[in-house]
Image 1 (cartoon, rainbow, N blue to C red):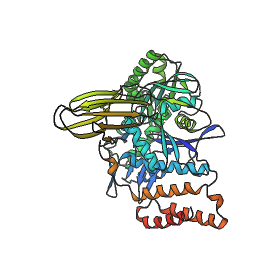
Image 2 (cartoon, helix red, strand yellow; image 1 turned 90 degrees about the horizontal axis):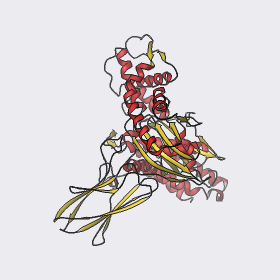
Image 3 (spheres, rainbow, N blue to C red; image 1 turned 135 degrees about the vertical axis):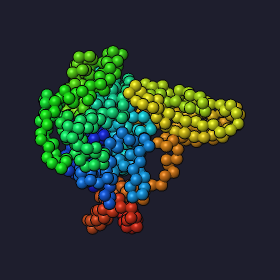
Image 4 (spheres, rainbow, N blue to C red; image 1 turned 180 degrees about the vertical axis):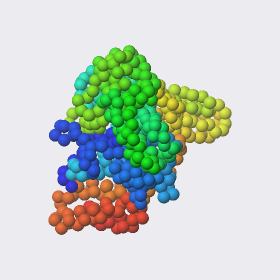
Length: 519
């Protein structure tokens, strides 16, 4: 419990790996995790308790079915996983992973962490941004949200106009960002939250499976997971050599002979998609005439990508630091109070209101944030009218993303006014005002209704209460004598050991009361 100031960390919660960074003595650095590594696999499992990172990966390789990968791309979708009879959405499954990142940061920094800057894909919808911020809050951190390409330009640290190509494992972002005088403004962003380098791993794994003459493998089969991991290893190797001799792990009844895999074979699987991305880059390059083309994200190392961009757009540049670390480092720099930085993000996709059969644009794509807008609607007849909010898709995205929905009972000619406010992090709040002065908020929800009615897990409530108490005790620690401090530390260790176990609610209640007696 050293120090009174609570640090804010930067988090890049990637599809395949997560990183957490901080700023110490003016230098940004990635924080090592409990396994002694800088990257934490973005994997969550359940085995009589939550398992995350490398523990969840090992659980998967043992054949456990309750292990979930690729969760980031499922945020805000209808995906649901049942754990001990209770359904959990993707953003809820990410809470234990975010909690582990916070705990590792606290162990490294030697103090509590109660806030973070969370980097999300620029192509994430407003609903996805809000759900990620809620997940961080459930993990014990208030979150500001920053777009990943903007974080990357912060890490680059130079002024000018940049076209940032962020090619990660699960998402693709192509953004134009301008920096001048400490102000970083997003001019335009397009991208896809559903396609990334991980899809190349899956395609290459399917190709290798055919060459090994293996039968169909289920997604939950540990042999398939092993093959996907091997495909990623082969892909990385082929980024540096034209051919690679691959020795397959034991996947069938008998050992397989080494196979020679050619880069050309891999590039056939990805050429169409990379050319499509290059077309979008060229269009933005011609429109904004930026000074630099920056590549970030692990998949940006693919030689075919650099070859096509260099031939059709411009010579790509790289950051001086590791491509995978740029976003986490940029988020940490934004989180640091050492240097003032003003970030002006822009809305990706229009916000539309569907009033019955009418469609009205409320906020246009590309509008700088923060932003406020309002629109008045009139009921044509007596009865129920539905009002829905949605965000339209960008160039590389699919269907519009639903944001909120409400049913209204109105008189003929009655008017209602919709107010929308987008803050600097791209988080939306919406409110309806009726003629009689009544106001009601429109909560964002993946199901477009009623998320706030869901009862919280008692274990999550316990953990949050414990954290609030720990933070309250920080300034009082100096007032305690040695015996009281010893008792305090013992109580905290006891409570931390059981607070995530929902069956130990009574134990935590007693420990919390003991802690409260010291406050």
